[in-house]
Length: 186
Image 1 (cartoon, rainbow, N blue to C red):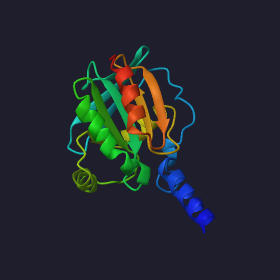
Image 2: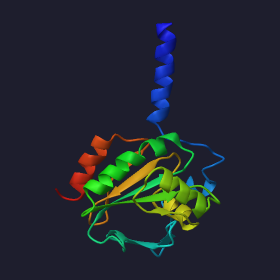
Image 3: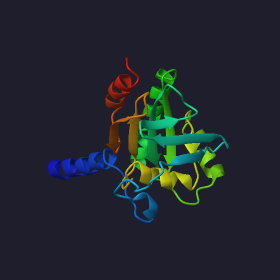
């Protein structure tokens, strides 16, 4: 009986601390394995669920988040159906609030045909305070970061726009806190 309980707990823990990968819900566009081979560096024009624009330019010196100058940025790729994605929302809210002067979370939904109405309900139900983008451009951005094959997938950029850390699966708040503190230079 003890072994059965241990096996069940192990499976639950493994599912919580790994990422989601449901082939029918993560579009093929997102599962790129290499960086795009482009002569001109891309600019991404993302739309939030509230209609605001977020412009991200990839430059030879790093990534420029136009609406968030001089801030470290955490891009988090997620889906509303993904349990680990939902589990880390309170941690991202806490970190956004704690470091709001120097840090910004930007959530990038990787679900096709997800309506802003349903996403706004999700945002309200989870008390999300950071922007969530919902557009076709999300999938192009996922390819530009090197591909997203499991979610949640997060990329932490320092204030200079350089990727300083990437994560796949749920991450403990303490680990994110330590990495964010380094990224903002404190």
